[in-house]
Length: 400
Ligand code: CTP
Image (cartoon, rainbow, N blue to C red; front, side):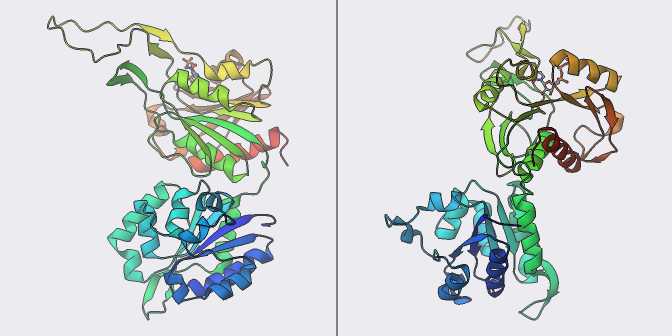
């Protein structure tokens, strides 16, 4: 299942560190290559020699080990991995990660990596329930860090409750899920997301209410299938998912350039709520009231249609171009017309009338429209909609 996957395993200093030895063995049984890193305090619980013997790899222990010419630098070490796993993740390591500290090898690798990070927390129940740990956990989840466990049970300290590191098979399953099923391996997908901001002057802009939630979920679901995702995002409320190539833009024209620069791609998914208009007479300096009581007159000009541009590319068009359509009336009729007008293969339509609670909510009810007709999906969590769409995209572009 994990054949050829390279896992950077950071072992923290907790009593559960002994389980990491079994974790190494089981990951290797699945075909993974495990590169172990021990924190200083982890060495109190497991020896570098046993870790190294089980992993059949050198154990990395010190930031300054890596200055040797013959060794990989910390940046390379953190990026050569397919996944970074922290097990056990102690309260201290979680706090460091949440604060962005980089004062030893483990924390520096965690700051330097561009790969997904999966943590298996392990600590005393009081520490797990402490407001500081709750806060840190929320920050880490917001940053896209994956979490497995902890489980509830009797703890080494004699207390009972949540805090015990997840069992090894549970961690292995989470590793498999984090690495995805690989069906979109070697495929490149461009995803646009979020709103765009169109300046009026250096301090004011025109925007819209898009949060970027559905676009972010799409990028994450495609990544989970093994695709390389270029995620072109306007200033969204939700942070971009980990493990995708993020390109941050503000305006529609910047989004267009970023999408053009990201080609070639096997598929492109346009979930962004692009401003249709920009202010043509935007001012280079802050607009002032002139005392006359007259409001300034803003002149608008149409923005380029990024989706239509890609859908009508004569050369190098992605195999599949997917647009989104948020409608309030005659959803299927309007979205069907939009598909033809823009030239895309599929349109994902949804009814964003306020009574549906879809805009800003966690659920979505979509109609998937292609050349053969319209297919209504049941109301589902946005992440589930994204997963099913990603699966359909993989099938459509002939991924394995
Ligand atoms: N879109 C785009 N570039 C634009 C406008 C829209 O790429 N300048 C994309 C959106 O990302 C979405 C699709 O086009 O995938 C439909 O966007 P929507 O705002 O619903 O369509 P409009 O072009 O604004 O059409 P209308 O004004 O008729 O609703």
